Image (tube, rainbow, N blue to C red; front, side, top):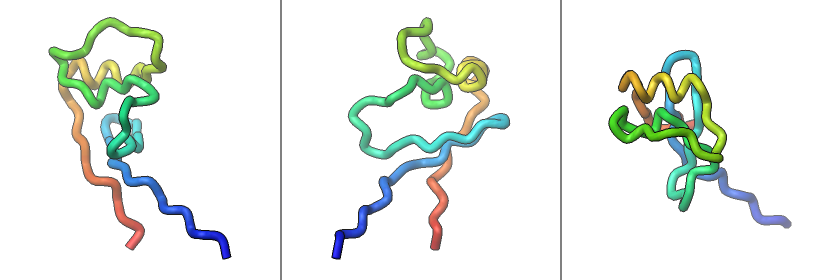
Length: 72
């Protein structure tokens, strides 16, 4: 019988009209999402994919991060 694969842990970042699941314990983010940064830390765009809405929300400082909802 094959072993069940565990679902990765994550947190749900909700802001504006966008929702993202950010992996917990990731060594490096796949994309640079503005919601994960304070406005003072938002730098110029680099080569990673960026959500334009995230960028605006980060620059305004209007964001919140909540725990990933459980299926229980």
